[in-house]
Image (cartoon, rainbow, N blue to C red):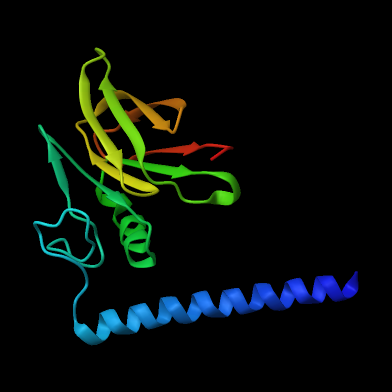
Length: 165
């Protein structure tokens, strides 16, 4: 029994070391080539015109938004940028696993559609006018709803958690 536990610990340590080396190697390669992502026309890439690892800002109607956070650089950049965006959304699953491909629909107080988009990662930042909104988030076949109020000054946050993947 004790041997099995030790073997599991060794395997877990080896996996952690391999992941750490892989992330460090990727970061080194990115740094060495001075390339932080794609171009401004590549909306899936971090490090484009927004800089600092931020994904490309998207525009639908008069609403700007950005989503992502799967990689460390993107995740860090989005977390740091939250204070500059009126609405911050976060999508997680069991064990605080980050989720992507969450379908988001935001409606205003009069039930008018404001934004319909799919988040490319666990974070979505949205520029909305002050007011009351309802955020509908769908991951796989499970829907959740949160009411948010965007203040004239400051920010609002909403977190969505799904217990099954």
